[in-house]
Length: 91
Figure 1 (cartoon, helix red, strand yellow):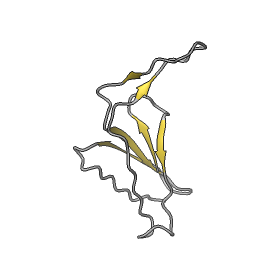
Figure 2 (cartoon, helix red, strand yellow):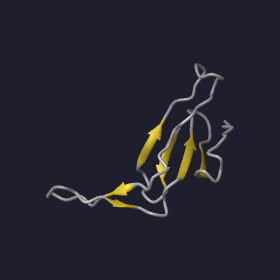
Figure 3 (cartoon, rainbow, N blue to C red):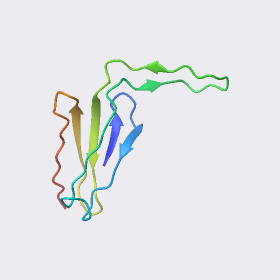
Figure 4 (cartoon, rainbow, N blue to C red):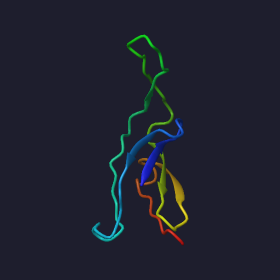
């Protein structure tokens, strides 16, 4: 599983495996930050100024995928959605 910040496509903030060794099999949990993400523009001079991306805190796109199965993506708004995203992957 991987979570991607809503305003920064491709910025992976967490991933975890869910497999037959999980309890129960296929289960997963993730603890995600609720503070606004900090982004900074690349620069050769340091320090790089980081700016909070307000309005995007607590918003995630959670993707579930497995080999030979169709991937699924669900938008989760914490705590509004209770922080729950369940997936049933189909071949």
